[in-house]
Length: 387
Image 1 (cartoon, rainbow, N blue to C red):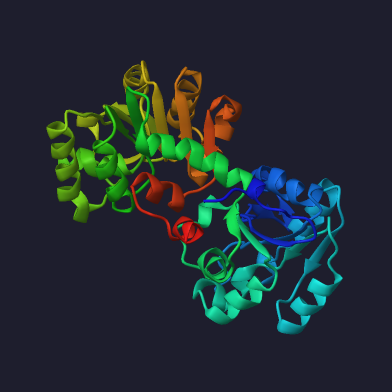
Image 2 (cartoon, one colour):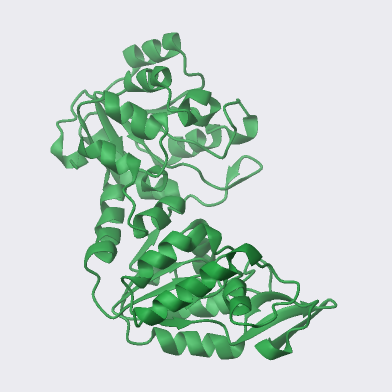
């Protein structure tokens, strides 16, 4: 894949697929991480006298114009932080696109309204892709987080544009992730949490072929514990995946991968919160976090790693006091001298809660794309850039 550095950008229209799917409250951005990470790419285009056209989604408006999903607040934010004129195109029609192309000058920035306001985006329609392609003498994808989507702004437009490549944020993302997928420095450990085994079957099976240790926490650990014969009370449980959990544990044993599960838990019982051993779980208990002994076990298990990846919290970390296990693990991982890579929205929030975001080697803003890449799948948004 070609890099942004490989192109002559002067007076060229550069359509950049960014990820400005940022959390908002009352039309205010509450976490600008994804915007900040794209600035090196945007600024490079501006400083090279190109015309930077920014294209993104926000939320899931399902092909309908919804004010709560407008990128207008992002436009207002960009006007404050960019040292260049910034324009906003509210409606993507043939006439408005043609008019804006004539008006846009080199060194200027144009933000397009949420592409998911148009059904053609998620359907990857050729008509919508052609409309976007009008903005692209060069197409640059700088949004790894959407590369698993076969959408018009990811795949469709890239198929129509000859000159295409990746931005600096994407380059950085692939540099770390490809190292993990191809030749990680060993020992290589993985921590996987979150709520469902079903959404991570592929990554768990693929990781067992790669890692030396696999630590499983969060609500998904309940399914593994129940598969081993423990009661998990009234906790979240995927009964239809008990055989899958058994298969994964059996496969890990065959591959001589050490697999770690919780040995104690924090439960809510009759509105009381208590830390108990696995054998003490009653039928009405709800597990919301890992216990002190599990924190010690997991922390000790992580010692000595050279490469470590983490995806998914250890419990219901959004609600204190159930954040303790996840925060403790985040701080432990951050203290390691290993190459530490974390990915996924909840994982990022947990790392920020622990106050250790600067201590990780790399934090990926991607969720689904992060998991599919680690699973070994070829992402359509990357494949099209190679053609």
